[in-house]
Image (tube, rainbow, N blue to C red; front, top):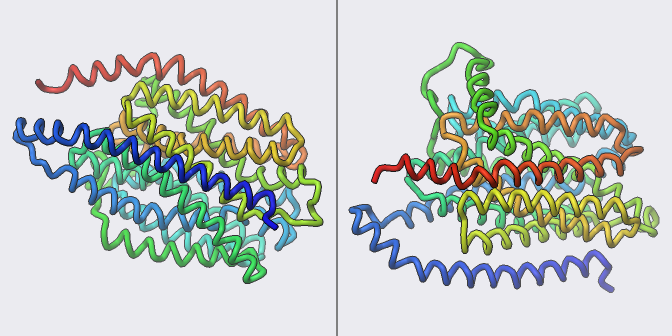
Length: 466
């Protein structure tokens, strides 16, 4: 007999397949409509017509690596909490300390990671990510608290690289190939879709690995193998790129002057300030959700702990929901993918995410909470390509990785403070705070970014040569 969560996964997969067919139909119609027009324009301007080849090559280079590294990351997702809490028998307060250690490490190293990526090369930092995350996987398999803490420190550094250097490499490479913003939007949308497929498979694979081995450490060992593969693929297929002054060796190890320049850029631009606020509120809520979804569903389940929840299948359902959000993004932006549209989507995504978390707090039903969490994950699926496009459009290449990492400092402070409140006794309070922060971010995006987006587009157009 198929259980509740297995049945919900089947429903979500069916919905995803339908959405995928719709998205492909809409995209194909637009491609056929614009293909001849674009070719004629390029020939008239004397430009080569090989940009599609450049797009295909860059998309393949990025998505292959992105799929591997995100697969390695997602393999660990369903069982981090359970490994610490159930297999190692650590009290929930200590589990929170381990999570806090990772976020503090990420917060302290985020600005430096961005500077080093801009100055010493994004490819080098991505290779370093593979090595530090492999070390993290090794540490987490050893049930000795100092080693676990060391693993969380390295995991925090790895996370900072994962969410800054990889995106910066893609945007810079697209700029070097003179690809239009619509092509970059296409890559971001496909990356989120691939991420959903990979995460879904990783959830099922991790569930099967745990079932076969009887140990929560097996997904982390498999993750280390994937990271080694990613290292080899990056080394063989990626070219290097830098930010401003990337080839000049600096004497300031901690790059305080460059960080000061980046901060002044953000301080003087209200749109960048709000983008940083959105990153703090949304990604902070997302990281806290990673810590909270398992105990929240366990608390609402009438059969737990007699019958354990199938965490791998639940995790896969969340990832399918994320894919649905990504497909919805692709359909919307296929029709119109400008800066104003992305600003409006950013506001709407934060608003719906706030509503989803609020619903999970108000209900004690296991099923309502599950579907509220699925809705939140669908918002995550839209958030990443939307935010990636906003950053790619509004942040210059010179400081791209630095600013992307600088935004992660308040993000990690927010997460650390929330975890240190005592999540086990204040779970609803933490989720309520996340919901309010997301609602505030939605309003700020609507009043600042949306209202200024048209002016920004107009000023950019006026600077282009005729």
